[in-house]
Each structure stands twice: as structure tokens, then as C-alpha cells.
Length: 435
Image 1: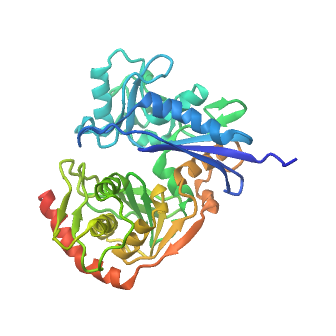
Image 2: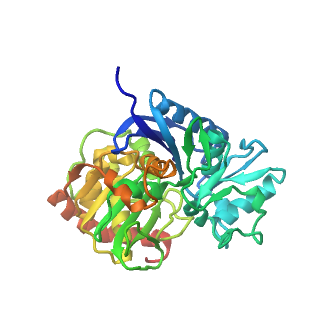
Image 3: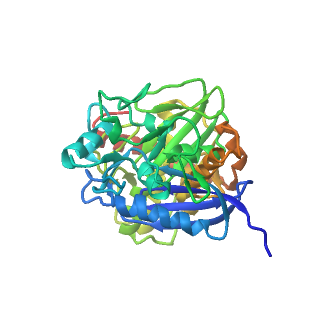
């Protein structure tokens, strides 16, 4: 009889799906599942989940699916930020879950403040207001909790001493976990506080040296250039790196899967190749505004230079190239020295996206072996909560795995290099301000 493998379960609540993995001590994925879900976006100003279905029901189903047949010794959660829903006394959502980029977050004091004020006005009878991580934690173990990293995305509502009563009623926000202690149990398995998906992804990606660029290819496209010291650039974010003395500069963009899925639907996702490296139109890829570095929610997409000789394959190839140009733009604004890209996230299974990323930046792309990076990172955090690892997050790099390397194609990289200034000009014109 086969020995039961001890695993930790990691769950990632993404924009378009909930992913879960069961991971052994060496980082090997023993089980995985993905539960797709709808995103309510009736206009560019709105981005919502059915929080009861996605943050609650799907999370429990995903956890149970990968737990079956394994000895689960810990459970971890990750989700996109910011998000927020009104809940009843049992923790069940009674409003849609508002997601990053929704117009209700356009508030002078920050996106989370905007979400909170909107829900306080729309659902004043709510028992509490919780982000996705807290709703999911409550569904799994009865504890609605978030970690310090997630709480920091709620500034200024989160202050030096926790939830700031000047900004909120602390009793209406989730429990705060300032360390990796378990916040509850599901069966015998300790459950850790929910964290930020991008942090969980970073833990196990392996982008740990100056010159590395972590590109998370999900519904949101996120670029983090690893650098020494604390570089800053207008329009970008700088965050601490897990390795001492390093930081990461960059930020999120709407030019990821959110944009590419729309172009695939429009073009019919043709399998044929574009006609020639020099024969691509240009996409301004902002279908619902842009986050970093432009910070312009009113930006909209445009197809520039389309002519009678272009077919669906050319239009789709231009979309993948535009996503690569967005990464290049972030690196240019940051003034970053880049030697290689480490690609993570669900988009890594799309070969054309990975190749276009290499061609548009003229950098080699090391593709993560496991696309469910955020779920896998959450599984690592579960090991800490279970007492199986120290609290040093940098140790998670031992789980980093590269599946393949994608090199730039010289003819395509040269053509992309000629198009890039034209792309920048087209985007700057649409945004009304050069970056």
C-alpha cells in the first residue's frame, strides 16, 4: 500500500479562477485543481466577483479537491488586492466583491478607502467588510484573517497599531495576523492568514538577483525588476525584496490576460503565424485604463496602423507584443538593468506570449515550471504556520523551478526594437502625457 504523502495546500483566488495545489516538502505538486469563474465587468468602470460563489464556495471546493487522499498538514491562502465585500454575521458575503481598478476605488485617500466608503454607504447594515482572503479564511476555518502584507495594501486604514479608528470601525474589519501563527484549523490542519497573491508568487519564482525581472503573467500583468538598494521612479512602486539588501521596482498593468483574452476572442485565436516580423500593427493595450506607470483609468485600447494586408494572426501577434512592450516600458521608466526575465503565472502555458515577451524585451525568459505560483507560495506559508519551516521567507527559493528557457528570435527582436518607439508614441498620444 502506497504511503500517504504529507502536503500543504495552497489556494489562490485569482481574477478569473480559483487555483489550489497540494505540495510536498520538496515543492513537488501532488495534486492541482482550477475552478474558473465569471468576472462582472459590464463597463470599464466596474470589476466585481460574485463573492459568495468565488471567495467562499469555490475556495472550499478547491481545497477539498486537492486534499483528498493526502495527509494535509497546513493550508495557506492568497488573493488579489485590493478587494472588499460586505458580509453578514456568519461571514457570508451580502454584496458583490469589489476588485482592484473598480471606479469605487477612485478616492483621494486610496483604493481601499474608496471601497470601504462605497460599501458602508451601499450596505450600512453589514456585519463587517472583508477582503477575499478573510472571506475565504472564514469559509475554511471560521477565522477571517489577513496578514501584515495584505493589511499594508489597506493604508491609511491600517496604521502602526492595526486598524486605525480614525478611518474605520476596527470591529468591522478582519483579524490581523502580524506573524505566521495559525489563525484556525480545518480538521487537524492549521490555516495561515491570507496573503497577497503577488507576494506568494514572488516567494517561489526564483527572481532573486539584481538583473532578474519577475513578470507575473496573469489577468493582471505585473513587472518587478530586482535591484540593489532602493531605486525609485515616478509612476512605479518600490517594494522590499525577500533577499537582504535588494528591492523590486515596477508594478501592475491591465495589459495582461484581461487584454489578451479579449483580443483572442476578437481574432478567433488563429493558430497560423503572422506574415512577417516587420508586418505587425500596434496595439495600445489599455482596455480598461492603466495602472502603473500611467495611472490613467480613462485610457482605452486602440489598434494603430492596421492595413488591408493584415490578418487575424497579425492582430493577435501585435497584442502579445504589446504586452511585452508594457514590460519593457516599466523597465525603461525604472532605469533598470535587466539580464533575464523570470515568467510566472497562468499565462506561462501560452507559448506565443512567452516568445513575444522575449522578442519585445530582447531578454531570455526563464519560464516557471509550475504555473500556479501564487498557490504554491501560499502552500509554503502554510508550512511556516505548521512549524515545518522557519519564518525566513527567503528560504522559499528552494522551491523555485524553471521549466524551460525562451530565447529572443533575432529577426523578431530587431523588428520589435524598431516598433517600440512607435508604440510608445501611440500610447503617449492616447494618454495625453508622455511617460
